Amino acid sequence: MTTLWIVLGIIAVLAIFVWMTYNGLVTLKIRVDEAWSDITVQLKRRLDLIPNLVNSVKGYAAHESGVFEKVTEARANALNAQGVKETAAAENQFEGALKSLFAVAEAYPDLKANQNFLQLQQELVDTEDKIQASRRFYNGGVRDLNTKIQVFPNNIFAGMLGFKQREFFEVEDMASVEKPVDVQF
Image 1 (cartoon, rainbow, N blue to C red):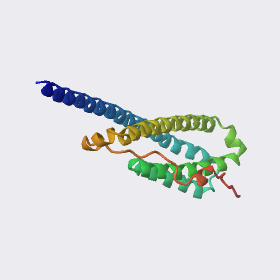
Image 2: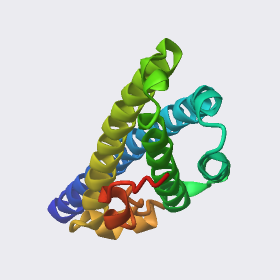
Image 3: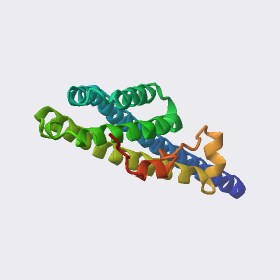
């Protein structure tokens, strides 16, 4: 009889552990999904601002068509990106094109004083700040989820329960993002 109670106790403890592990993993997965959703919302907001910004700059710098084509192409790539890795790569390309656009805008004093351009630029800066915050929140959630999946004994149950590690939202080529844009006229 005592053996039966010991076996039932061990089964109960194991069941409670699996239950708590599962709920913890689900909670972290939902946080990561929420954070990814926040990133996509902010990226969409930025992509929606770009045509207005490009049109404002076009009026002043019509001969800079190469820059506008790069921005438009990078925007299209960012809109069509799927998944974390592809989205991160598209966003890196887009950020480079955006730097070129702002470098062109800097060369036109009338444009820099234009209220529409200034407002769009401020909205874009605000959106960029929100994107950075969303990326940090997402990467923090991915870190917590991946850690919980990898630590013992959770790693035994996580795979059986169908939980997989997630990818971080990373900059692939840090040098290209940190390098200032060369503007030549």
